[in-house]
Image (cartoon, rainbow, N blue to C red; front, side, top):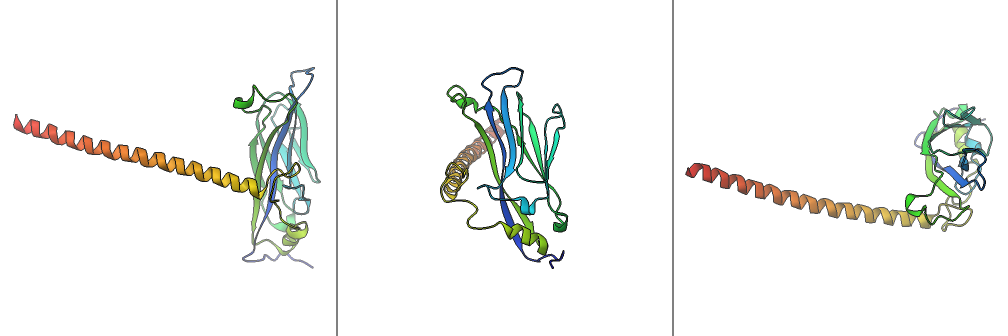
Length: 217
């Protein structure tokens, strides 16, 4: 029988995907313009219920029963509306885990980016997905079993497919984009730093010239 004893030195993580998908309603009989679904799930559709006790989605206060709770999968809420707002997704773990709840925050997105709004195909969903990993240090024996119960094979596939939004390939591409951005920022920083140093030298020279003129009077 497993106990509440913690496994010292053990660190284990589990990947999750959260966010929302939205699609414009073809006919608008009210002020609502979109149908949307907010969710929490495994990256490749893995069963994450073995280590999750409950998931709560806090919606805008204008919704009836704006705090939706789910103790079984799928962890998702589907609604209709017209406005974007912040959604809080709170994850509760089994009591035997000894872990505190974790809250995730994201903006509900209904509309495509401004740069693509004019060319966005009619009926194409707007996907607003986020990848994250839940990290547990020194888990209890019982919780460790729950965390490893559904872990089989690689969590993230090599290449993205229709069912797999995230992949090692896209992760590597994102790392390259970040490296490029850091390189550009560093280049600009060094450029402005050089300008600032040159300006400081020029200011010092002007001060010496002014001091020399004052002394010659």
